[in-house]
Amino acid sequence: MSDQKTKNDDAWESLFEKDHILETIEKDGRAVVAASEMARFREPRLMAKFDHRINLPEIFKKCHLAILPISRGSYVISHFDAYHTFESKNQSLQHCCLPYYVQSLNAENIPSETIAVNCALASGMLSDFLGEDRNALVPTVSGRMGSGEFSFKIQNTASKQLSAVTVENSQIEIDAAYEGIETLTIFEIKNNISEDFLVRQLYYPFRVWSSRIAKKVRPVFLVYSNGIFSFYEYKFQSSDCYNSLVLVKQKNYTIESENDTTIELPDLEEVLHQISSFDEEPKISFPQANSFERVINLCELLQEKDLTPQDITDKYAFDIRQADYYSDAGCYLGLIDKYYKEKRKPYYSLSSFGRKVLSLPYKKRQLTFCRQILKHKVFNQAFRLCESGEVPDKPTVIQLMKHANLYRVHAEKTYFRRSSTITGWINWILGLLSG
Image 1 (cartoon, rainbow, N blue to C red):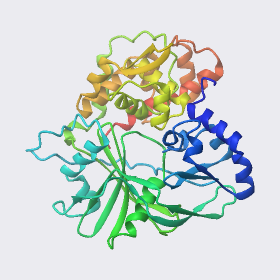
Image 2 (image 1 turned 45 degrees about the vertical axis):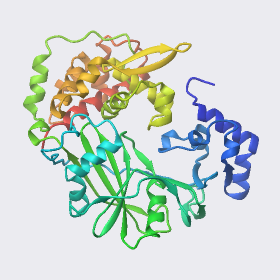
Image 3 (image 1 turned 120 degrees about the vertical axis):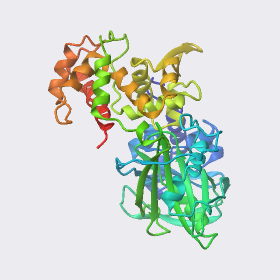
Image 4 (image 1 turned 90 degrees about the vertical axis):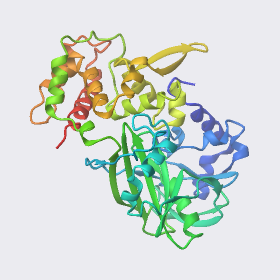
């Protein structure tokens, strides 16, 4: 197994070869795989859980395939258009607050998806977003349950036609559901940032509960990261069509006060003023991690426990290469530590400094991240060249890099790729500014 292959890659390649799955799909348009067959190579739950496109095994990506559960013990594989790309998040932020008497919820420490949705309910976010009476919202169905039987149509990425799928008592899981006077809202909740999501996570529960109650069922995706609650409400225009979802609305909330979240240019100028000398470039590969939001998000995930690159790939929206890149980016900034055990197996942990940063209120936390970035000469110089909110172009950034004594960056193509990290992180800093 190569360094960039996962356990799922190996398991699926073996299963495809033994059961001639590609030949079956070519002949019949799909292949049905039993969990008992999968268990010969790896635990079925791990082999079939791909919440994001990037988690798919290489053979699925190469052949444009996806997998869906159709019963308690079987899955169907075909050229399904199974994922939906998140729409661009708007930049507005609405402020809510927890009731004065609540002591067990802390805006600065929201370690799980369950606590995130509890904060959203207690602070009034849910009633505001859903337009339901705050006192009428009641938590109802959640956890694992059977789907019953239903059929639907899903787009085939190869033929562009709709394919029929029948589900018979598959297992579904609902993270949370809240019922109000008029509607039942079903939530899929994540504490990790991604570009897309598996539509099944909303569609199967939507179909199940639409058939069981008379009220309208509303599918909502909630993402919590870095102090921000981002809600996406979707609607299936045709209840029997998997791909018919459209965004109804998207809003962002925080339970910190406006004074504690507003960042203005003088705040960033003060950060620059505090930097009296640049940090020496660490003997760590210069980051190739364009999204600083995802660097922060990985630090949040490491709050719970130390993770290997394989753990990060299995559980979150990273492939094995990105797991290394983003973890190393956190190491570059002193937020993450890397250590080895079990035959030199790499592990990543949140550093003591990283834990301290994540415990800070929103504004102080963001400005501390900014300082950690701008303490590095090349980022500082690039930021100072910004004019009217525009980051310098790539050729300019690359010239700055070539004079910054970066660790093991020599080839022109490496400078070009890594320059995207500089522009990405500077854009993240500029995006913090109000108005």
